[in-house]
Each structure stands twice: as C-alpha cells, then as structure tokens.
Length: 107
Image 1 (cartoon, rainbow, N blue to C red):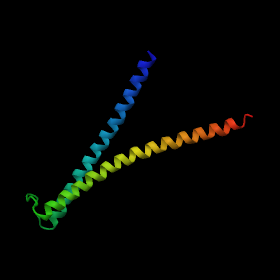
Image 2: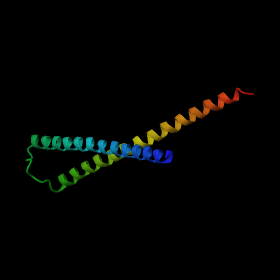
Image 3: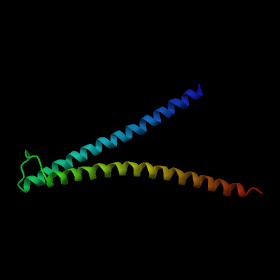
Image 4: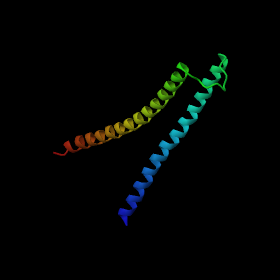
C-alpha cells in the first residue's frame, strides 16, 4: 500500500512539474503575441500596412526575430531546470558537509 502511495505522489509531482512548464509556455505565448503586435505597430508607424505580407529581406528578418525569440525562451526553460538542479545539489552537499562535521565531533 505504501509503495502505491509513493508512486501516486511521484505521479502528482511529475504532473505538477509539467503543468508548471505548460503554464510558463502559456505566459510566453502571450508575451510573444504582444511582441508581434508591437512589431506590427512599429511597422505601421513606418508606413507599412498591417495587411501587407513581408517579402524579401523583411520576411527573412521577421523569421530570424521569431526564431531568436523561440530559442531564447527554450534556453530560459533549460536554464531554469539546470539552476534548480544545481540548487538541489548544493543543498545536499551542505547537508552532507554539516553531517560529516557533526560526526567528526564524536571521537
């Protein structure tokens, strides 16, 4: 029974972790849409109509900007996971270090 409880807890933790990532992706997609509208607004100020589809170098530039946004966000997600892992590792090193120092006092 206890083993099943641990499996259920692990499943809930894993589901919460993925839900957190999905919520982060939802926030990012909102930010991305806001950036897209801001670029359209700036283009409108320069005299480019909203209805025009960019072509040539403008299209290449737009796609590069979108690619950089996407890659940047994926790197931030990965960086967040790495920093969490490092924080856990440092925490365990500190706990084990204090345990070793504490056990050294018993001679």
